[in-house]
Amino acid sequence: MTTNTLIALVDGSAYSESVCHHAAWIAGKNGWKAKVYHVMGRREGADKQDLSGAIRLGARSRLLEQLSELDAERSKLAHEHGRAILEDAKSIIAGHGEIEVESRLRHGDLVETVIEKEDRGDMIVIGKRGEAAGLAMEHLGSNLERIVRASHKPVFIANRAYRPIEKVLVAFDGGASSLKAVDYIARSPLFAGLDVTLVFAGKETPEIRKALDGAMATLRSGGFTADTAIRDGEPEKVLAQITALDEHELLVMGAYGHSRVRSLIIGSTTTEMVRSCRVPVLIMR
Image (cartoon, rainbow, N blue to C red; front, top):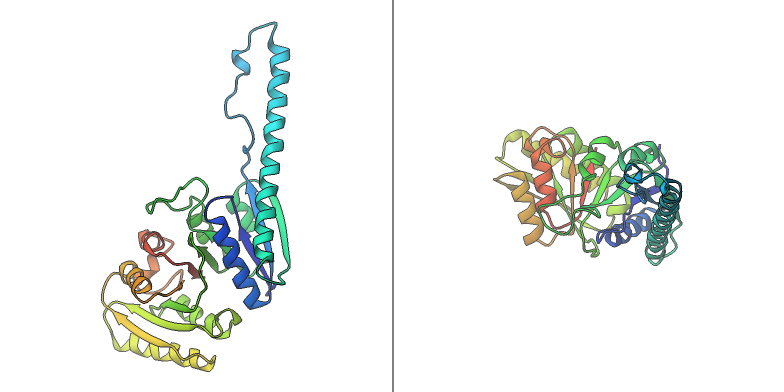
């Protein structure tokens, strides 16, 4: 069942602005509305240090009262910060045109929130790195892999810098999820008018050639004139090189398949590929 709704996750990091621009692009092309979530951790705004045991008799009551007031102020500031993040996100998305935008401030675990709310959306957008990860290439958002593992919806992983998407690279391994990705592209308004290239990383076999020809037929039925490429090498290295050299702005891949791409999300291949690839990644389930 489709909801015509996009779920975007923002945390105030350097990647949140990119998340909003990509969310607006996706929602605008699909005619969807956008729901923006900022999830505050259970202890966010609370004092991390318990000082009550260090308070001496006589001063205990007043100091406990002051600590309580301090915790309340921290909680208030954390809520105001969360609402400011959501207001900024709504402003960025609305700036792309007539897109209906709703915002939600939630407490708890981010992944639990996504699992609870994902049935109300058709796609999830999240930044490659979160607020605590910094900008170093070796760091990924701590919740990213957990969300991709847990979600049953397509997950769009935004990189730091937004740029318009015109060329799409599809990681194809002949497996069920890559075939589903091809079918999704052929049917979705999101990809209308974009250049699409299917790439297989590995040795060509008759089975792979047949699967590529079938995928091309599916794309042609959707009005696409797509290209194919077969490159020998490790999937994460091949995909990163092609996106960089051929200036693709989006990589689409399935979460499971029959080749080494299968370890994407459930092993080191996906983590390494997402880390090394400098364009957004759309992962299909």
